[in-house]
Image (spheres, rainbow, N blue to C red):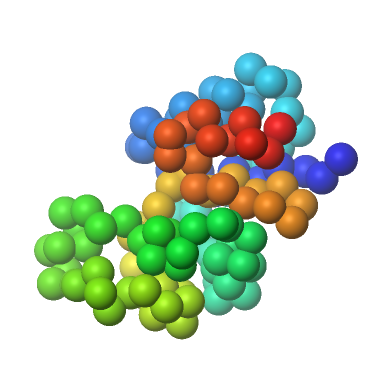
Length: 116
């Protein structure tokens, strides 16, 4: 069985919810606190290749995004998303959960169950 990787931000309620579900299911998983250990270009491209969502969905368009003066229309392609997240890892949507050749942005947290 493929090991599960949880790209986690402990300050995020959705991320904590996904972590709780994984623990309740007694899943074998690894936690990566991506703000302490940001994903590199290859890792970001892998995540984008495994999620069913458009690349733009991996970007949080929150107050931080707006405070940087960014426009969502400029971050629709894989290259643009990767460049942005390399510079601003905090803008990565979370949690991201990977297992084998699949990944989900677990919003809501229950989406993690798709990988169990």
